[in-house]
Length: 607
Image (cartoon, rainbow, N blue to C red; front, side):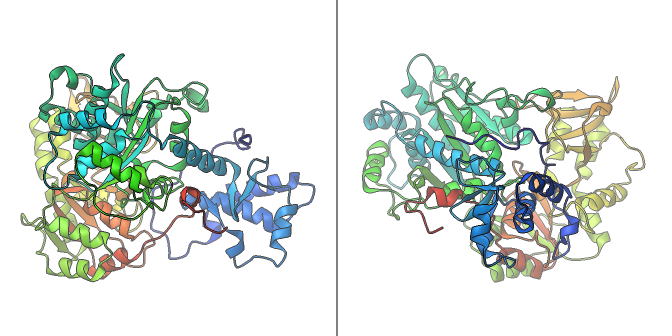
């Protein structure tokens, strides 16, 4: 039986802030004060207080700000000799299934809420990783042949990924930009509709952010227009995505979600794009709200940045992939091709994971593709060498690099936005202005600091001679910082302020391709968006990207951040910073503390 959620009656923690430029070590006093106050308050309720256990409780709360779900008391420098007995004796600590603020689970210490999220998510996904009722490999083969055509001579990774997803109620498709995730899932949905019969399947599309949902909708519509399939079949495929929060139905005034285990979602198939951005708590709540027989399909890139909030869910779900002999034989039947040789699964979800590796966007000679591959494989010397040999910014090169004065950086950034501002000044339609803005973006690791987005935005405004002394002006791009469910605006949504006959209005692209506008006075908390953090850029793509690297000693200079920034570019990327900083970023691969991968292991490791 699941324990009650002990923190339901406590205020939620403040959301983790966007990355700032911290010193190499963050003093405990710099952290929010809530963890210590919470630990002291709960400790005072225990029959016998223990300052070390109270410190562990505070550190578990603090860990969430770093993205960690749990911590390991046994590896701490302050571990007392009698640590095990003190943990057992403390009223603040319980075992899985018990009621306590902290749960000790196989040697790892969790806040009760997050232990429940992790355990429940693992159990439910494992239960769904099975063939759906009535699955017939021969019928699946006919559907695959219909939507993909006859099997080609060469191995087709998209065909294999779709077949794998047909054969399981839970499936994962991971791949980098341009590897065909959207193409694959559109054909997969067509195959599901063919196999679904009557009544028609209820398929839903969702993504973590409004921007990601809009991109997903646009991509699915484009794929539907290209597929040589009967119009009646294509008409049954959804092409409008929504955010996960809107899908679940957020209740006003902190009332939780409308949909949950007791009131499941009305759907048969749920496809979630940009799944690497989904944190542990949100994915657990989505899975809770699924009907028992519904299919869940996750799309994402396992090598991108983790979610801003706690957990490293998507990489954990993708780890340990492989195929057993019987699954390999079944997939050969469904695809008409023998799956490539590979390892046996090391994860109990390993057989439902498909990874697309062939990029249709970045060819073998693509400068962006080569740089992204070197980052992904951890070849720091090759990355530094490519940047050192890259031409200076200012041309039409797919890859350029620079490391000059602040004025030079401002000039390059300003030049990138001149075509956009021309659209604003010409009075182009809002949709055209929004599209023009999305052709270029400045990305930084930090929110604050010398090259953080706050200062970069101010410098770009000055370089473009914009009236930054006014709070709002025509042409100002804005990024929403907090969710407003009444307005349907969400953290990360991008809008443009434009003059209209009714006055200045903020314009936002809709998932269905339209544009809506509202008074700037109604906007939730927002910032200027000429520059944005790499975290906020996830789920977006731009024709050209100016990537401003953090210093080599920045804790945010990581391989995943650098890879994510570079792969936001469709056609050209300029990397601004010291090649040594690029090398350092490639070599820094931090890991978040989480027990999800351990719960999914074929043979659980030692505690």
